[in-house]
Length: 123
Length: 123
Image (cartoon, rainbow over all chains, first blue to last red; front, side, top):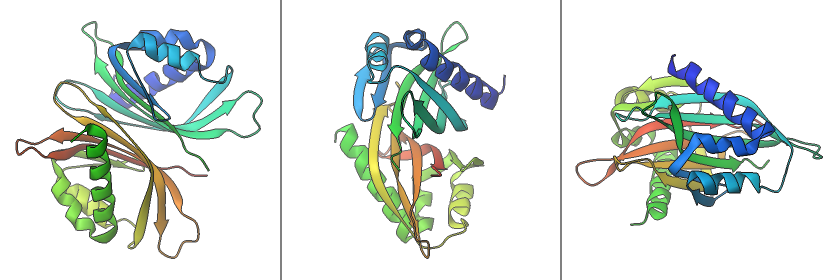
């Protein structure tokens, strides 16, 4: 699978899971994983899922505008950079966001999220 | 120097150089460096500088809103995620942008940019 297709498949899976069953995101992180969400830092799969499931909105829908990816070095990692918009239930206007993921390979031939940084782009 | 201070210092240096003497950015990249600028991929310090100096605007000013950073793994790298706005000469309104850098240590104790992804956030 070529890197761009892999990045796109990851991004689709990530936001579909986020928007339908957020606790399922836990499978994508490991103990060393880091999340910085709007400047707040969290580490470890369990703490990251706790953070994501406790955000002050329940229903939401991510719409992805762009996905860029690059290999991150000899360890076989991949950087994925996303821009898009986030529609919260009950809000009239979607919020623009940017997010980056650093995916690292697992021994099983899959990937996990080592780094995750999310920011809203206030208009 | 703590990582957040290092990231902030890098970001200040990068955009000051971009806005005053763009060819000077060449020192920050190496042969394996990658740039994806608005979806267009370039590799290598020389090609990256050629790309950045040939962008269709001469004078510009970056204003940084947020800087987030995380260590990127055992190789000692650092991920830096920036949001901000870009004012082009002659344009009335600034453009919002997001950019990520993957900094890797050099044997001399400094850092170079291995990965660079830039996107405008259209309103």
